Length: 437
Image (tube, helix red, strand yellow):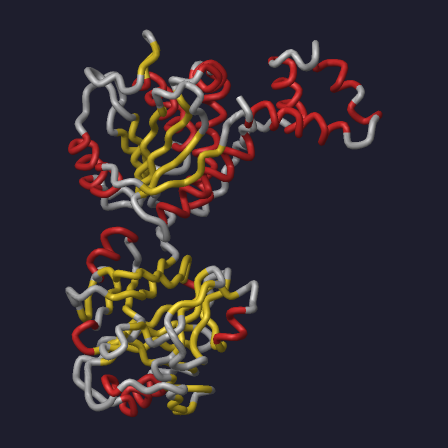
C-alpha cells in the first residue's frame, strides 16, 4: 500500500517548496535531502498555470481552485484552514489548497472551488495528503482511480481532512529509503518532511569537520600567513569541544594535501550526519570584510544549521560584519550526501579581520565555541560549555578607542550608568565607524 503515515510529534521540519520552472523528485532529494517527499501542485495544461494556491512568506502564487486546504505553522504542524486565514495569520507560513478537497471533519466532502479542470476528471494515478489530530498522511494510488474513490480511501485511512494533489505521470512519493512512485517530470510545488532522528542511547551522531586547503595548497595568503593554518586550528578547537558529544571525522588532521574529491569521499564513506567545512575569505578589495556561510540550496537541513551558526556567531562576535547565509555550487557542498555547510570565517586580505580575528587565538576559540554550540543545538544535544560572550558596550568602546574617538574606555565603563542612553549612543557611534570604513 502506497501510504506513508507520519506521527506529527515525529516531524522535525515541514515545508512547501515552490519553483517557477519546477524540479524533479530526484533533484529535490539530492539538494534538500528530505526524509519524505510528495509532489503537490496540479498543473493546468490548458492555461499553463498552477491550479492551487501556495503561501510562502505571505506571497501568493497560482490562481484559485479551492480556498480550503492544509496550512503549516511556524512549529511545523499541519492544520486544516483556508487561504484567507492562512494569508492573514502570523503563525501559518505555508498553505496548499485542495485540487479538490476530499475529506472535511471525517466526512467525504468533495469541494471543487470555482474552477474545474477537465484533466482531473475520470480515472488517474492520484496523490493526496491528509491529516488528523496526530498524523500526517501522504498517499499515491497504485492504480487509476476517480476522485470519489480517492476520497473514500483517505477517509478509510483515518484522515479527518484530506486534499487531492497532483497525479498521472507526475506522481512522486518518497519515504526514505523507499520510493512508491518516481517520476522524471519537473513539478513546481513539493511538500518536504524532515523527521526527528531517533538515536539509540549508545550511538552518537557523526560530524565531518573539513579544514579547508592544506599541504601544497595554502589557500588564501597574506605574506607568510596562510588560510590552511587557520582552518586547521579552528577544526582542532571544534574537535576538542565536540568529541564529548559526537563522533568526529576529519578530512585532514595535519598539514597535508587532500583533494576536494577525497574530502567528499571521506564524508560519504563514513555516512556522517553533517559536513562542516572551515575556510577564510579573501578579496582583491582589501576593504571587504566579515563572516559568511554557504549552502548548496535554501530550504533544507543545511540552511537550518547555517542559520543557527550565523545567529550565534554574529550575536556573540560583535566585531564581525555579517555577510549572511548564501548559496553556492561548491564541489564539497553539492557532492556530500549529508547536509553540508561551508564557513568563511573572515577576510585574510582585510587588516582588521586578519589582525583581530584570524590571528587572534581568543577570537578563533570563540568562533569554534559558537560553531560547536550551533551544531549541538541542531542535534538537540545540551551543551555544558557556555559560549564566551562580550557586551555590545565593551565592544563599542574598543572600536572607539582604536579609532581615537576616545582616549581610553576605562572612564566610560566606570560612568556608564550615570547618563541616560549613553550606552546606546556609544554603540551607534561604533556601528557607524565600522559600517563606513
